[in-house]
Length: 634
View 1 (cartoon, rainbow, N blue to C red):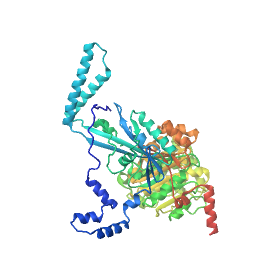
View 2: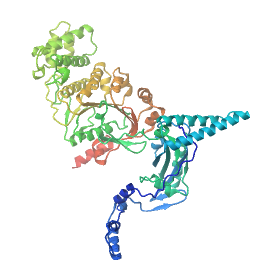
View 3: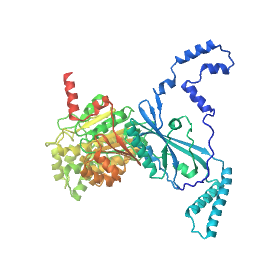
């Protein structure tokens, strides 16, 4: 953006001692307007003794000024000491001819305590146009004299003339206005060495853009006062600047991610601000959480769950390692252990009781259920031929028809549904389905019997439900997760309510095409049902290599990347278009640190929890053992 300017000297602003109504309001807030002055203003005659009494009385009152005032201030030539902090004010004395938007972002996000004050004084266009006219005449005369003498042209004069002419045109059209602009920066540090380092960093950042600064030596008090929120410009070092470059000096862009509502995710490592927002305010509420083992994945997920529970959001968790038990017990939730020995059962043939929207059309409920069952049975059966696939599809519809559930049936969700045992019977009596019936018999009569062939006895009547699958055999886990997700999805579609579904170790589903497709379908449609799906995994390669891995990520507005291993960080860099700086940050960050992506905003975050929260969400073996020992002792 072109920084067009003139070279005349600015008129000094009026004295800062001017009596301003804003200062009166500040004095009143701080308790500086004394009753003596008020009494005088009202015309009350007070004796000297009365004045002394009122003065002593007011000195005994606590005021806001007493609370916010520092214990002491020492004003020195090169800095100011406020309590135990060293402060130094810099002023900008030189600006480049060209300056671009967002040039102040690096300074604002610097890891240091700084105050930045900008003073903008509008100038009269009429007076400026008169001076510009005179300036243009002088520049033209100087250029003409050089030509007459045969001297080589001066590019500086020609550039100044072009700047002045362009500014005249813009001012005449009303596209630009002229202002006087002053900018002051006060830096703070614990000692003089740190103060000098911060000053060097700021001078380097701004100097690279040709924005040059100097300390306000011998005027440190005036410089410090100018950066306090008092609207006092006591330094009065200003520069003429037109609208466009002045607008680029506003710090519109920052790496802040703070809202007036939502939950606390952590501390912004750029500028120590708080990362607070509501994921349901994003285009969709889906979240991906990637991290290496021990980097704080479960800690972060459980902390988010705990804080959303306080906002009344329902949470359902698929827990592969029983890590959410303590949290679930603490909030009065329900946990459903799924295993062959467990008393809890979920029937994969269940139909939703009621459906909202287009899915409520006759036959749509049954068709959707048949498609989902198709994917589940392919997980159970393994690879099947196209001919067997057709036989299986017909057998599913025939099994429902045995209970009177057809595509023309009204309210099929209210009817009694079949079980896996009914499907096995149908396959055994269908030509081409005998082999599939034999395979499925191990889930009805064999070693896996009882888990998937009974009627459902699980109710989602609590704010937090945890489905535990740790005690399941490894080969049954993808099948169980698929059935649980289908069960949850059926319940979600019946009632519109703000919910979060957490799937820990999601790579269990991504390694099979049918289960990955089913998960992608839930993620893609979750927004319509006020649902946010959180997928957590440490096996990034398995997740991304699936044909549905990247679509799941692109359909998630929130991503949390914690510490990564060197083996996976390159794949993540390509997937999320990370800069080299962000890549190395993920490699070198500590536990609970990483990058949070909320739509188009990237923030380096450190997840923090209070002491009581930590007791509930920690996954460190030592902390878990100590908590278990404490329970046993009680």
